[in-house]
Length: 425
Image (spheres, rainbow, N blue to C red):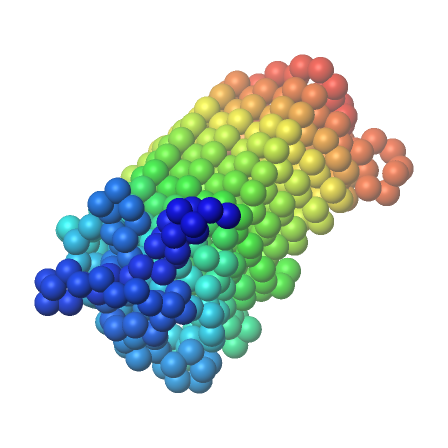
């Protein structure tokens, strides 16, 4: 290595500028000093750019797993959000116990903010500290956020699940979501883990231009309502290369979404990838422009599922949706449209669902079904499904016995290529 090249590398790795009192002084320091410097440091990135760095430990975080570090996280975020330019919030390795916290904007003068999270965050188990329907860690009204670093959000849901009455009570009190994103724009989430959420693991509400990748989600198969990723009233959403095993839907696409792409997802255990449930409330938004592709379901309760409430009070639509190149391994209900959805013992069925389903494509779906009915297309008698296409579907029974069957109701389906099970008579 030449002296000139060595000098350049040294400067990139070790020059830290302290932005204090506007002095602009440059201090040459060891790289490890970045984690113990004052509350705010400035790292030069070259080309005149610099990133202000805020380390939660500099604000008093103990990272011992028992001390409540919520106040330190809030203080670090406050300063980061109130600064100018490009910002980094650093959460070093360690175990941090934190209560409910909101990383809220707008951060008016921040162009981009990156949270480098290497630590292991543990949620408080005191449910009285959480608000109804809130998130444990909630990001809201921020432009240009990146969350990365390989860290973990541990919701410690084991102690909360016995208090979840949602499987039996329509008006239940919602437990907190592990990580919630509200009204975010230009968000990137990469390489983080969520375990044992009290309710949903990750939820998006009214977000635009959201990219998630290399996400790991884990909870027991019997954990209630622990959807891996829930998306609602959002557009321009892209999730890829993630592993999800949980007690409910691996991914659920709720009402009001457009241009959502889900690719290269490994799902299991769980309830598969679901659109819905739709039609529970009045004035729901339509779902359109959904693509789910190149994914694997293993041992799940459903594969691809579209579900709408039987007694929907208002009308809406789900259209232009494609599910392709999906492998089903020992899956119950590999392909299912259920417009009489009812998770309770009984539900009123009049009037029938008013959610219109149309222009839906199932292409190159293959593998094994653990149920005798591998394809179930059960649509609304008020608004029958239109333009449902099945192309090259090959689903054998896991038991290796006779061929599975199809079930159809109020649907005009069109078939192309291989069809196992055979189409409905």
